Image: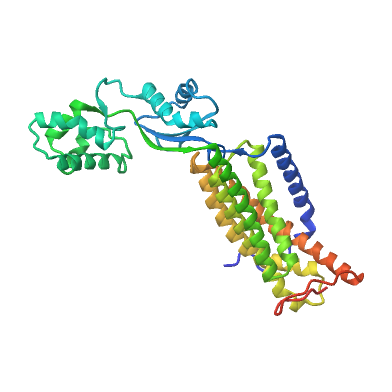
Length: 401
């Protein structure tokens, strides 16, 4: 499918506004990073706890935040999951002793603030298999239930499996819904009503990241990004020439720096999912640049008498439809995730949206001008009697003016 045919846009003639915009964004982003002492790292990188809690009714985020702030020092972030009565509670705890007690503090605070007020009864939405079995073993036997211990354990296991399956996802709203569970009789339901209560919330997950692990993740994320860029340089340099690889890597590095700079300027957290998005963008932007470079290589033998910048401009126009289709469809998908994916996917999708925009125009307005500049510089050195032009591997197109 070809959206545009025989286009002749002078992209290189319009490169300066984009280059200036890139310089402004790069300087602003780097300035923000320097002033703030680096990116605003999420719990993944700086250490802390992440608790996912689901409620029967829409939760009060301010109430959760205030209740935890009274017992836990440091930053507390409460993010609501869009479309669900679910929140993600992040606590910034950097002291190892605080981390060791964090689980109990978070759980106890939630229980005292939102827990069921039916004293003495077991909360079926928070209980474990062993606790529930202990709770109903005696009452069930007194009510005439003749279950062996293995049968009792199997019954409790089935009840909790039903509670944890969709659409309940850990929250049992009524005991009557258990009627379809294997071996759950009216007698069992009556015992459950007497001994337990369906609480207003459940803990869906709890993660703890120590400060040492967070530092290691920072180092690994940084190394992964640099190694990806280095790998791309080697690949493009081997497939084309070194100057092609250099231009492509500078353009991709430009995309990464601007995206991270935007996170700093907008006070957005950099998490592991954001790093995953950045690595995705490294590949996406590089692929887009390689398509243009490949067309340049194909056109060079047929346009020996043309200037190199003319060949580059024609190649960009010839790949324009492909660029718009690929980048446009990917951008729409990322934009939908950003607008409707909720807080959990916000950082990841924002990095994709920003990176696709910068990655697309950098292939045209950053990588191509850098390639032309490097080519002209090498040719000038060769003509002046300096270092000869870089050798080209067999089968590759030599430098032509």
